[in-house]
Length: 138
Image 1: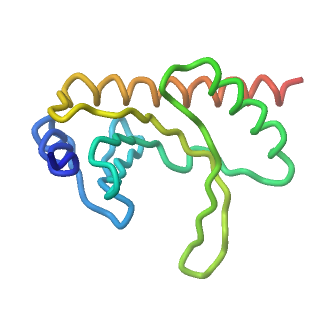
Image 2: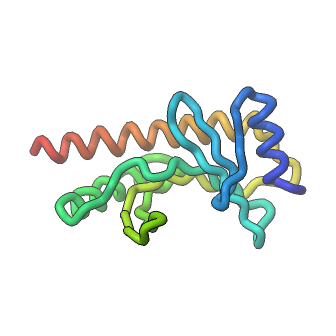
Image 3: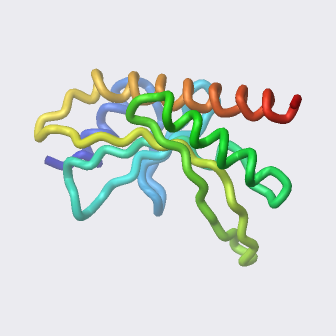
């Protein structure tokens, strides 16, 4: 099974415009960026992500960690975490990423998995941003 090929074919059939990047397969849905990561060591590992949804700074780090923990505990199969990335100039930035992770069987039905994954990722993003806004108001 080549989950990467299955994913590209599925996304193209559904009208998305997938393209391969050094990180995996990138596509947009409703103006939001998504990345599908291929794990060379585990063909059944399915990880779809919303990258860099919010920048972490010294001023907001504690609140972000608390809100991420709350969202992680309330939404199935989805987890939020921070990731450090470096740009071409060597400048590092920390941001919040959201991942949908499952182990797919050897004949995955992506039409059953991908829409639900996208929905859960979008829901986690909304919950995170909403709780972050609430925390800022207090």
